[in-house]
Image 1 (cartoon, rainbow, N blue to C red):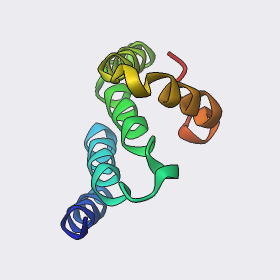
Image 2: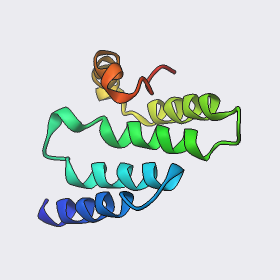
Image 3: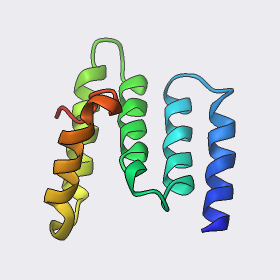
Image 4: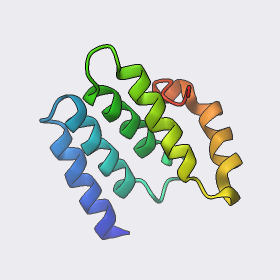
Length: 102
């Protein structure tokens, strides 16, 4: 866990100097590594990845790109935790930039 947190911290630090999709992708990586020990933060990496997809999309297609990323992520969920994650996304969507509206 210490190595994962250190790597996550480096990714978060690198994100500060970036902009757009690269920044959101770095934050997604940082969240994935740095907050695995905090259950309340488990949606952070997914939310930042959706923001990265939106930011990387051509003009006018950012919402569609975000929805596609959200749907892809949901398709990867193991059946055993699917409803738990979807329920958490519904409950905390507002604090995650409403990216889970897909």
